[in-house]
Length: 288
Image: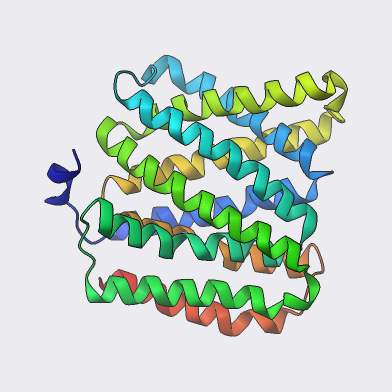
């Protein structure tokens, strides 16, 4: 499976670039919802309600993934559940404008390294340089607001980055083996969201669900997260894992702005230079 794909890997087209950049915007948006609606545990439950409903709408048209694909789905579900727990804890312990960039900044480097070692992907010099520059710009965003966030929050964010890298690689293999991004994504998130919402309900009962307005906003955040990751899965069938991961993580620019403007976590001027570095990295990826 990996060997046959190796011959078709190529630099991202303009369409893939734009779609993954858009997925980064969507991703920052649903994470802001997860951080800001009410308490983070309730927020993650609400988001998973939206994910579950969206999956149920899609599955009648795509069907469930089957056969050996289910091994990828099972592994990804396990990692996604861990990912949501450590991300939730990072948001509890630290600022959004620090936790999000650290978590998303670590992942592209880990994913690129894993893709080269395990999937035998061959990155061009431009792509490799672009991945490194994007990662440097993303991580520098965390230092710009480091005084506003705890060390404990940063450590949890680093753990989140490791989880992101793990599920990105697993899903990269899985969606390529499946060759059906929407079916794979719907199967994965139907199971994962059912387990998360079921766990919260068993632990807290139905009283954990807040007002109708918060429920609707949280569920919409879940739908947005589903759309964003389905775009990523689709893109992973068309270019290297590292390039997709790096482009998606440009959502940290929007996260930094949200952190400064909405959550009042730092000074706007401190995101300008890191943003320019990330933009340079995107340009290098496009040249690759």
